[in-house]
Length: 60
Picture (tube, rainbow, N blue to C red):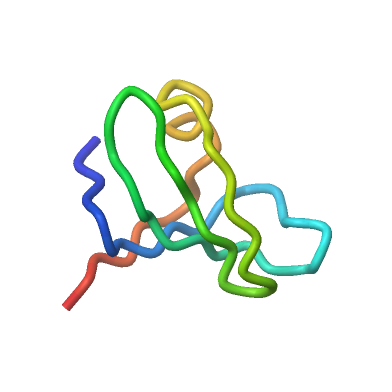
């Protein structure tokens, strides 16, 4: 799965703020994501993230 910094991911489960969209800030064994609804940032393991992705909107 090809995910790059700047991509916007739509996940299966929504964040408590109601948003499903996350911006990729860091790529590696772990990803740093920023919620586009409230701005909260998380680190998540690659394996867990790849399982929960519904859609990838690539950067321009």
